[in-house]
Figure 1 (cartoon, rainbow, N blue to C red):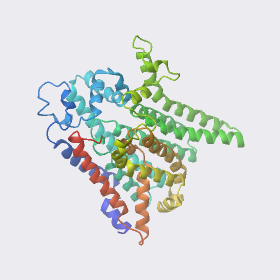
Figure 2: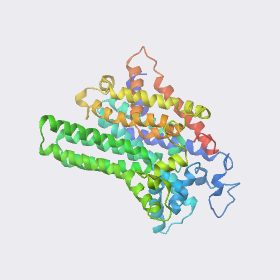
Figure 3: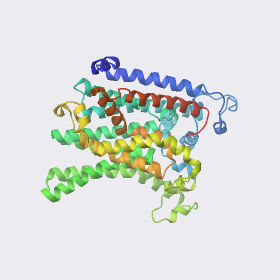
Figure 4: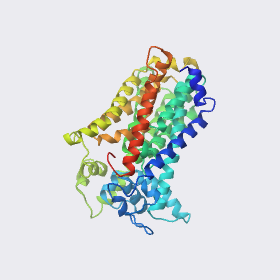
Length: 445
């Protein structure tokens, strides 16, 4: 298929319109698949949610049909606060609770159904803007002046729509919000590098600091948001090294201070919830075992004690099927991270003349490859491995890797043109099957 034909089919003259149409069609399909599942499903936990006006054992209001697995905790915590210790494993309810409190102040009704409705709407809106943020991030790195550049940006964002996170990007889960915050943070940080190149220091500093705030909130939603702090650590190291080898300047000192503040802000996303938990449990009569640790952390304790997370703890014979389920995503994340660390010249050539690109692809690809690679390693060794299929949604490098393979096939007639199409088809099939399983409260979660 020729590049011109591809561009015509996806309306690259108006990519946002094309992405918007594709997004809502996909969301409508997923919604039908999930809500059409009969009854409360395999697990009846959702029926334990206090709800007046219906027998939840026979009929569920549609917002609660999307409340499965951990989202039951999320709805409870968003409404009542952190009542149970194990709820401290989740940061997403803090963000959801912010919107719930706003509803109450405006005179809105409380209860699980309105909260679930808010959460579902929030997930849809966050996912949509996450798709747009990925398009803009791709444009910052690869450019969008040529048809080929716009095709790279479009296909990357389109893959984000149908990514394996599937139902979890529509349900009352934190994946959509995390993805939006994390990718938006990457977009702003990449923009700060462009501003630095152009000598626009005030805008550069604002972009760095705002990216730090977004990463901090992302960290509150999911702890792996701290990995995005690598961008600040990497640039701080470069500045310190330049200062030692080339001498200090006011420009370097100012930039180092801004990067330090931005990186410190990311750390607060993890530290603040820990301090709140310490005040709740360790400075009261609720004194818990983890309070006496050298570095007390309720998050580490809860993940270990309640969820059995830890180094190689998930490596059991019974979990082999879950490792097999996660294997394709782990492979793609690992392969794409290695690809990006090499800052491939192939993608630079695919994006067109380097002068037409707004940012050197290699410089930002390297920065983004490390967090994604670390996440893949941590998921394989220390997490419930199957969740990598959904938490990978907030990391852009693997989208670009799949698109790069497709672009290589497009430019080389000797290669299989269907590689990208097959990957997309596999994601669609997986997401639809996952939607049925999710709607029926069947594993894997």
